Image: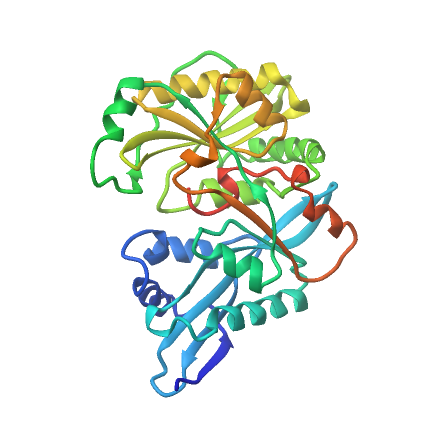
Length: 353
């Protein structure tokens, strides 16, 4: 019978963590050192809460449970929370209760450090464990919306065999245009100030959201070494009025344009359609098969629907996007966490894309 010790991990053994991940995954960012160094060591909200388990005799690293610190806005206040990700147990040591033990130890640390709650987007295999064993609440599934651009290629690609889930980035070419839609330069300090002013104004539109200030946007969409994002914005009267974040990738045999995030001041439908129309031109220029957006039912969801995006029926989804929340430590306004209609959630809010 194996005995295990569960201990805090400061992420200094990334190579060993990668070796552990390779017992379960053969590809992906979770086994990419530059990605993990970005995710674990450069996050502006701090290092992960990471608990690992070791087999006492062999000293084998048997599993890890990890949540990433994230700052959120709740009713216009900034609150410390976290995002659950990269949880795994080596196949050799599964079935020994390590998942639950590591998770409970992690949430104990979160409570001590005032990471008041944890959100997650679990895959179908791990979802039951989060909900049944770890006191997560399932708030529903996030809708996936798509807009087809190349119908023939969609049909042709559908019948190809051996599709790779993630086949790599497709480079986006910024279009020359004389409109007020511009490419975001993260090294422009004037633009940084304009964006922070924009976020301070717009964040009150959302009851619950990741705190998407400039520091977060820089880290999430500019400094990530293994993915390429393009951020565009609308400026009027020397102020930012709207932002859209795009990525293009080969996914399941298709060339997919991803709307990672969409932020529209004052829920301006006309402004939102301008950004979506520009994005369509960008994606058509690089021969994208369809545009996809993950978005719960906020104003931006309505704008996407008005621009002829349609919601994919759940039975046709390759995987449902569950959204779960766990309270680690009570705090004022915590009841807001458990109403799905309060949340703004997009592709950019979790780590898959």
